[in-house]
Length: 140
Length: 140
Image (cartoon, rainbow over all chains, first blue to last red; front, side):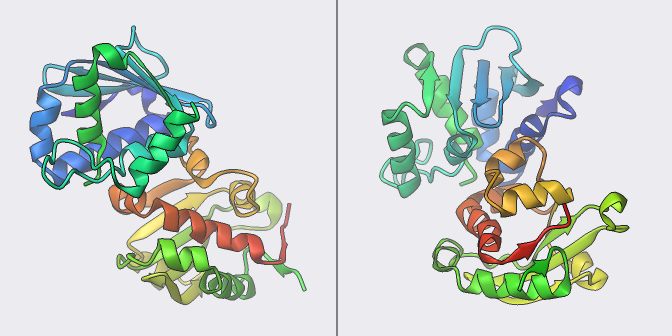
C-alpha cells in the first residue's frame, strides 16, 4: 500500500515517512481502511532540514515522492520536530479516529501553530484529508 | 581532562552523563525496549579504520551499562543508529538538531522499529544531548 517513488530512494525524509506509515499499517491494520479512503496530495516541508516530500494518496495506495510533486491539496510546513510530533499525537479516548487534543504533544503542536512555526495551507477545503493524514501518521 | 571520542573511557563518561541528565530520566521513563547502539562509521582519514559502536543498555530512564567496540553487544542491540564521525560530532555538540539530522539522512536508524523510536523521540534527543556535558576531544 505504501510505495517509495524510485526518485525518492535517497531522500531520508521520504524514507522515514514511508517507513513510518508502513510500520503503522502493519502495527494497526485499522489504519489501512483510513488510507484506502484517502485521495489527494499532501506536501510536508521540513523547513529546518531544507527538505520537502509529497504524499500522493490514490486508489488505496500511497506514493511518497521527493520534493514537490504536482499541486498539493494540503501543505504542512514547519520544523522537522513539529512534523514528527504529528505522528506522536495520541488517539482521543472515545473517538479513536481523532487525536487527543488535550495531550502534551497536542499542546506543543497548538503552540507551534499559534506561533506560526507550523503552518497548514489548504486545511479549510481538506479537513477530512488532514484528519486522515493524522490517523495514518500516528504511531498510536 | 578531555576524553577522545570515540573510546572506551568516553563511552563510560557518556553512561555517567546520561544517568546525570534529569531530562533523560524524565523523558525516557517509559523506555523498556532495550539497548540502543550508536555506530560511528569508519573514517580512515581520522584513523578510524572500522565502524565503532557504543552500545547503551537502557531501561526506564537509566543507562545500566555501556559497551564499546563489542561486536556481541552490537549484534544483540535491537536499535542501531549510524552516522559519520562529523555528523555525530555535530549532533553531540548541539550544532545540529537530532531530528533535523534524521530527516536529512545524517543520522540513520539502520536497525529497529521506527515508530518505537519516534514514540520516545524526546528521550532519544536527551540521550544524544547528554553527550554535550562531556569534555570531549574530537579527532576533527
